[in-house]
Structure formats: C-alpha cells, structure tokens
Image 1 (tube, rainbow, N blue to C red):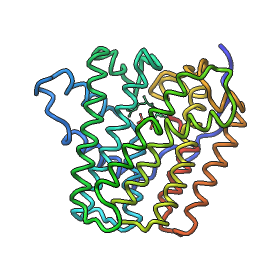
Image 2 (cartoon, helix red, strand yellow):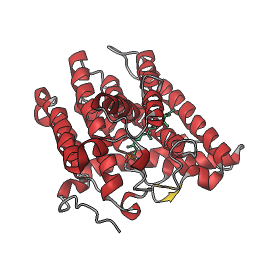
Image 3 (cartoon, protein in one colour):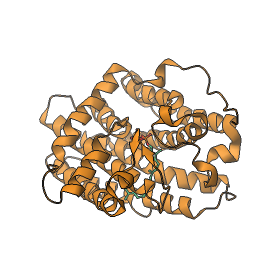
Image 4 (spheres, rainbow, N blue to C red):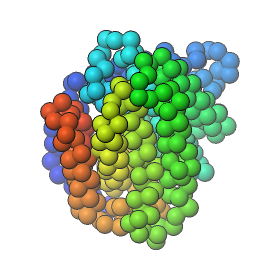
Length: 312
Ligand code: GRG
C-alpha cells in the first residue's frame, strides 16, 4: 500500500462548537418536516428524497445561512428566524440534489455517500434523478415562500430567488461541474482550477451566506463582505475536500476516497503541502473580510478554522 501523508495532529476545530452544532440540529429537526410523506405517491421518489436529505451530513451551508442571519440581528425565536430556518433548509436541499447528481454513474459514479450507499445504488438511477429534481424544485418553492413572508426593506423575495437560481445555473454549480467533467487530468492551469472549484462548490457557499444576509436585511456593503468571505471559504472548502480524498479513509470521510485520479484538483497541481498553503491563504482572506464586523463575526471565523482542520 502507498504510504499516506499525515495531515498532522487532530486539532480541536476538527469539530464545530456546541453552538454551531446546535444550529445544525435545528436544521436536522426541520428538514423531514419539509418533505412530502414517504408513503405518499410516488413513494420511491419521496423515500429517495428523504434518504438523501436526512442522511448524516455536516449541514455546513445551512449553518452558514443561520450564522450570517444571526450576525445581522435575526434572533432564534422570532417569526423571521423560522423563515430563515426554512431558507437554510432550502440551501441544504440544493446541496443534497447536487450530491445525488454528482454521484451518478454519468458523473463520479460513486458507491458511498455519508457512510451509506449513494442514492442511485439504493433506489436506481431513474429514481435518483427524479428525487434530485424534486429536491431542487422543493428548495425553490420553499425559499420563495419563506422570502415572501420576510419583512422586505432592501431585498425582495424575487431578489433572493434570482440569486439562488444564478448560483445553481450554468454560471454557477452546473457550469463548474460541466467544466470539471470535460477537463482532462492534464488541464491543471490555476485559472481553470479556480473557475471549476469556485463554481461547482463556492457558488453554493456564497448563496448560503448571501441569502442569510438578505433575509436579515443586511446593508449592501455588509452583504458584500459576506459574499467575499463565503467565496474564499467555499474555494478553501473544495481544496479541503480534495485533500481529504488523498489523506482520508472511506470510514473517516463517509464517502469514496482516492477517486480524484482522473480529475483536475489543486492537490494535483500544487501537491499536498502546496494545496494546504493555498487553503490556509484563502481562509486568511475569508477571515480578513470579516474585520469590519468585529467580534460578533466570531462564529464565521470558527467555521473557517473548522474547514482547515476537518477530517470529514
Ligand atoms: C442542479 C444543484 C444542481 C447541481 C448540478 C452535479 C452538480 C451540478 C454539481 C456538483 C457540485 C458538487 C457536488 C460539488 C462538490 C461539493 C462538495 C465538496 C461536497 C461535499 O460537501 P460536504 O462535505 O458534504 O459538506 P456533507 O455530506 O457533509 O453535506
């Protein structure tokens, strides 16, 4: 067996703080309530939606939405906070949709996700595709309804939906994924790598942060700070994902590892140490953009530390 380079000693931020884990639990309690009953027709699609959405993920994107909304004054007990929770859950539905599609034989052909068989392995490809599309549509409907009920000053429900749709479309996740799939392992120029990663992964982190800020009616300049933070965080997150692919085990990561041999990644272009340095630099940029927000942005700094030290 080839020796695996060590990621170094496990650091405390390998896990999130109890406060952030609690936000993840709020999301996990709400998610199943937002889905059609599993025994309602078409049963297989509804079961697959539930299987994909409620399997044990880190909930990092919806946590980001909730933390940002909280930073700009949405408490945890107002009517507004219930709407923000639904928007955060909508973001997690988009993420679950993207994972189902990414795992399909036509894409990564993955067998394991979140410690379980991938959706197409458990339900078949046709049901997996339909469940992914149903989750995406549920997400749009949910965000539209929640945003419609927010007291709008600076941003309308239409602004928020438009933002989300742009993050997902051919100039967002779909665009990044398309370029990823069509790039050969030799095409490792940094501009292409950055395009792929900031679109296929960064765009949803940006939307998660931005929708949290918009839902909280943050000022335009505050929204921009959050966008800058989330853009760098999202890119760093994808680098940490690529690092886990070479440094982790399926048991630890809960998904297939060593799968990136045919893919274009920063690890391949810069090596493990180079990718770790770039990841740390990007997280440094992310944290630097929080400067004007002072101490109240501490949970966002914590998320950045978590990304750097995570093991799954
Ligand atoms: C229509 C939404 C939509 C997408 C179509 C398939 C596709 C385009 C994009 C794929 C995007 C993708 C899956 C990028 C990888 C992102 C990534 C690093 C996922 C792992 O995220 P974690 O670690 O997973 O947060 P958990 O399981 O913890 O939620």
